[in-house]
Image (cartoon, rainbow, N blue to C red; front, side, top):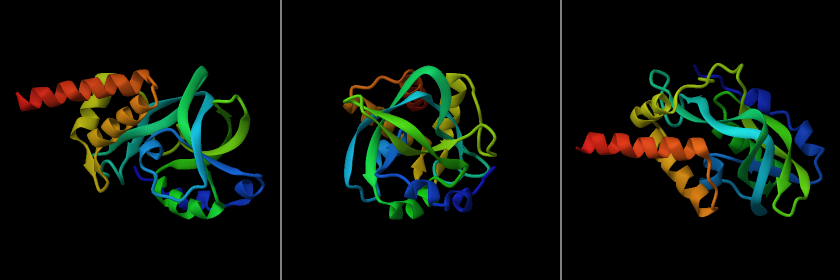
Length: 192
């Protein structure tokens, strides 16, 4: 189910209080940077991990056949790698549209590679949003991703581009890696 969160996210009062605005990307924002930024660098969000638990009814799937994209799930012992972009407040009109299907813009503490910490803005599809699909086995997630396609392309491409981007940063993510391998196996079965 689609939930357009643009109106909820349009309030800029929290962002305007920040000395610098850092945007944390943990999924497609790592490899698809279609907004201007002043600086970028690797960062981590402690206590969170990425999962393919958010439905994509508008980009990598359709309302009838949603894809699966990433959201963040609280896990105290985890540390999620991403890229932080220093931006100006005007980029959020575009980003709020891009991340409109159930994602809320939240401010969380980022940790940079030099161990400095700063507040950062990130989009999270919380479990109570209508597009949240929740957990499933890796094979069920891979099967759903394998057949899903939307206006932004195939859901498989989303995973492939993310896996390549994480590999370029020498980052191993257990779920991304597992889903990527399963998708390759599903592709090879289809081609056989």
